[in-house]
Length: 263
Image 1 (cartoon, rainbow, N blue to C red):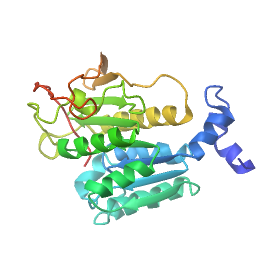
Image 2 (cartoon, one colour):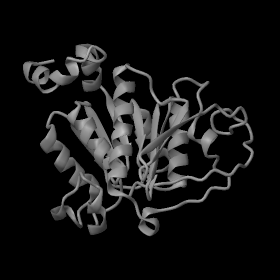
Image 3 (cartoon, rainbow, N blue to C red):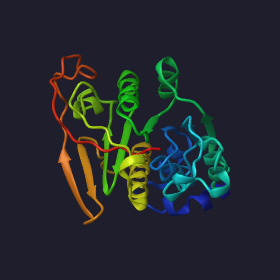
Image 4 (tube, one colour):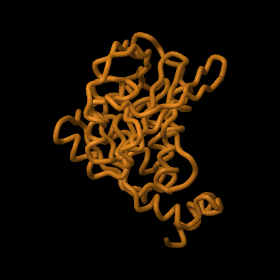
């Protein structure tokens, strides 16, 4: 770590829970962020500012005027540009030392798997269940920690699925793909602007702790926020022994209300 890095990251280094060793781990890490929207915007800002060495951002969409109410990595002059290009420009201004790789496409199949395999950790900032399940399957296959977040209206949720340990639950254990799930989108339901900032920043915090090897993560817990009353609830999660993704079994259907915001 050079003198400029010691100065830039001094407030992390002063924390005994992080210190030089933890900051060095961040500098050597590679995070895959899928989604440069409401959740990915604040998450990417804190990841880059905190010194994550390499950040790969995957998103096929262009910046739209309706995004600017909450997607704080983009500016008015970015409207019409690719979100990943707009994000890279902003993040490079914040910290030119972070290597920003952009994937301006909808990654699926082997392409998604190669992106997940190349990263140390994955942050899911997407807005639909099909993509979330595809990301989860890839993280299970390559044993990558997955930091998941969602937000709609005034309701947010965050969880960590640390798939380096096969005894831990995966996203499918909580939201089975064949379950009775209602998919809601902010384009028709609305979303409170600061809510995605809170959730996305929490995702960044969980990712940084995992990478630095400090603190207790949200693994095994689902954290839920009602922003109207500003009340948090925490629910314990357990691995589904019949999960057909991480346990190889047949998962029974169940009904769980879920919320999604990424775009």
